[in-house]
Length: 31
Image (tube, rainbow, N blue to C red; front, side):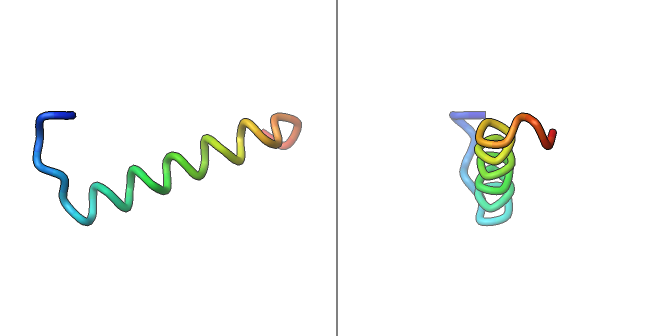
């Protein structure tokens, strides 16, 4: 994963996943 070339689409997906994780960590009661 880390050694693989970073593509725009995968990078965006990773950013979305990070956002979901942040929201989940901030609002555990909703998730």
